[in-house]
Each structure stands twice: as structure tokens, then as C-alpha cells.
Length: 620
Image 1: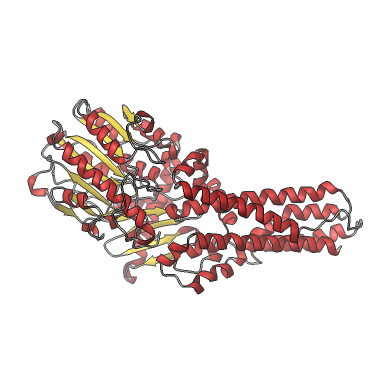
Image 2: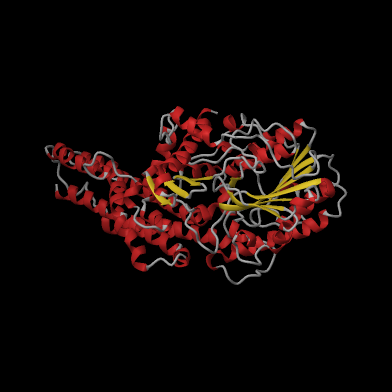
């Protein structure tokens, strides 16, 4: 009997130690980020204490199967039961270690734990390899092997208890074990007697997101993410108000006193070149608050272009940005419309409108468009010509993600000389995405943990400068509008919190000889999002903007003024009164600068926006 109880307790102790080790590895692996945010050692170590409730709950879930094996062993001795227990534990170790190792890889880019959405990327394991440097990839492999093998050795050597040769049959003890121990396991798994079971908020304790994520148990977090996703079928997780009331609020937000616009172009049928910049934060742009010298070529373009200085990405992932840019459909938490063909096939796009007006179309990318199902969405757009990595020869320089920006930009320039005008050509850069293996020596020796990132942005910026110098010599240049916009932001040398507005701010620039003289050098300070590009462009071209209901005309002085962005746990809302950040899963406002007398109204605007948006996403 003592052996049975001791075995259960020793397995519980093993899992608590295992979670402790995994958390230590996470903190040590991200030590540069912790130092960059000037986090004290004491506060970082508190993660281990605040992690205990969720770790205990997770351990209790993991012990349910071994528990029933032990119950059987109280009256039936067989060596295969001990082996089954060991196989189960070994499998659980492998799965959990794979999960935590993957989180080490995604955290620097995603700033989050492994969500349900990330599982879709495992369909293309080569993306995981290509998105990290070679040395990082093999470091992660080494961590996985050492932790999984070492942990199983610890389990076998110090925590596993042989039952079959040491315990006698004890028929009365089996039901007693179930009656006493099973309720304790259930109680531990739900985190106590309280009405609401334990959740991730139990481990949140710091204003530093990295410490909260370190404290949250990875397996528990992923299981909740999966459960929440399945629960969304038929039920909006962001139902804050009566849906009709929320729709009324959104209608009021979008109320347009006057449907007019300022025409900034000399023509309503220009060629259009859309350049989507991978991971460009506003902190890369001097005129939007960034340090001088990172993107000097972009700075020169601003002088004769139209710069939008208060623009925000609606989501943190590239595939979310595609829906926002091309369909004017904002990103939202949990999933993305662009990874689901049954949904994005019902969305109208900028490309559709232009094709209807006799534009030829093309899309250029140096990597593989199947990641995040971007290719499926791009093809839905109706682009007649799609050029990706396999369409380039051996004369170009490739990195781990694909062909570098200078060669993709050059290819587009060459091809456009043979394109029927008017044309719409989109190009998605990639060199400013990790692993930052651009073919250029580093220029900057500052930037701390984001030194490689700012050097990669300098490279892409240099490529843009060369591109436009060449473009000016092309016959189609004088009738072309160039639109440069980031897909999403990125952690910068300033190390903003992932949920704060400053993190999600991005640049957008209109450029070209088709811009009227009086508007060249203009800086548009209106709060805006990428989703607003659709209606803004349609109004300049005298085309129907009705299909883009979430998009605003940024040249209409009467357009509503706000900015929205989403992240895995909630939303940020920026208005003229201030901003708030709401983490929906734990019902927590991590930031709120809105005056007290306007707080309720502004909060209702932002939360209604997300509620109605997600409702529409579900019903598409």
C-alpha cells in the first residue's frame, strides 16, 4: 500500500521538477530579452513561485492515467503495467519538451506561448527550420534531445517505483484509493474548490509579458487554446454585449457625416505597385519616432510622398495582414480568415476591383507562399501572375527563407516593362524576417537584442533606394502610384510590451509622380489601420468601396478616427481620448489611458468592434 501511494507522490514530484526545469530553460534562453527590458533578477525568479498552481493542475491531469494503472496494480500484478506507465511518461515528456522547445523558437517573433493557431504551421515543418538561423535550429534540437533524454533518465533513476514485484494484492485498498485520491487529483486539476476553475490568469503577476508567459504552464495554455478554438464554433468568445447593441455601437463608430474625399492623384487610373514590407516597425522610421539612419532611403522617399504617421497593423502575423490589406478585413484573435478557404473565398479584394477595371495583375515573393496559406489567398485574389522562389534561377542569392529582396525587386522591375498597362503589381519582401541572413555586412553595432533586425531593415531599405532609382528610368514610372506598407510590426530596440500600441505601429507611404504637387511631402496624422488602404485607394480611383465595410477613406476629413489591433488574448483600441489594452481571456485591462468620464464609452467602442468583427468572421 505504501508503495502505491509513494509511487503516485514521486510521479507528482517528477512533473513539478520537470516543469521547473522547462521554465528555467525558457528564462535562460531568453536572457537577452530579459536584460534588454531591465527586469530585476528577483522579479524574474518569482515566475517559479507563481507557476506552482498551474504546474500542479497540469501535473494532476498528467497523473490521471498512471493513477488508474496503480489502482489496477493493487489487485493485479503484471510487469507490462509498469512498462505501460514508463512508456506513457516517456511519451508525455517527449510531447511536452517538443512543445516548450517550439516555444523557444517562436517567442522572439510571436511574443506568445504556443497557441492553437501555431499548430497549423506544423503542417509545413520546413518553415520552422527556415524561419530560424541554422545555429538556432540546431541549438533547439540539442535542447530538445538533452531535456527529453535527461528528464526520462531522472524519472527512471529517482522517481519511478517498481510495483509488480513489491506489492501484494490488496483488494480492499483499490476502491479506497479511488475514493480518497481521485477527488484530490480532480481538486488539484481544477485549482481548488472555487466556482471558476484555474486558468492562466493565476500565473500572471508582472507588467513584463515575458515573465507572465514564463510562469504559465505550456501544456495547460495550449490545451485551453485548443478548447477555446473548438468552443468558438457556434459561439462568439467575445460576446461582451447584446449583439444588436454592439452592432449599433459599431454603426455609430462608422457613421459618416459626409461622403467626400480629397483627390491627391493626378489620374484615376494609374499603375499601382504595392510593396509589403516584412516586419517593419514604426521604430525603423525616423519621421515616426525611430532613430535616424536605419532607413535613410525611405526617409528620402517621404519628402515627395504622403506618409501616414499614425498607422497600426491589425494583427501580428503576415497571413492576417494579407486579409487586412487586400480585403480590408481586420485581423482578430485566435485564428485568421486567410487560412480558411471556405471563409476568404467570400471576401472581395482590391485585386478583384482592379481586374474588373482592366488591370493586369502580378504578385512577387522570394519565399514559399504556401506558409500560412498565403498562396491560397493570393490565388483567390485573382493575381494572373504569381512569382515565388521556384521561379528564380541560380544567379540570385538565396537565404534560408528564399530569394533576397534586391533580386525580387529587380525581377519585378524587369517584368513590368512587359506588363500591359494599367497594372497592379504586389511584392512582399522577406529579408527583414529572421534569420536575418541578408547578403550584406552589418552596418550598425547598436540595437541590443534587435541588432540583426535593424541591420536587415537597413538592407531592405537600401534595396528600395536602388529599386526606385531604377524605376524612374522605366517608361511606365510617371503613371505609377507606389504604395509601401508593412505587414505587421516587430519587436524593436525599444522593446515595447507586445500588447502596447507602440509595438503595433507601422509605416505606410504613397509615392510617385502621380501624386499632385501640393500633396507631396504631406504627413497624414489620422489614426488608421492597414485595412483602410482598400477604401482609401478605391476612392482615389473612383471605384466602388462598398465591399470594404471595415475600411475607411483616410483622405476623407469626416472619416471616423480610431485605430484597432488584435493579439492572441484580446485587443488594443486607440482613440483621440486615449487608449486601452484588453486581455479578454482573463478579463483584464493591462493599459487604460482614457479619462474616467469617457472610459466606459471608449471601452464599449473597442469591445463592440471586436465582438461584431468576430461575429462576422464566424458567419462568413
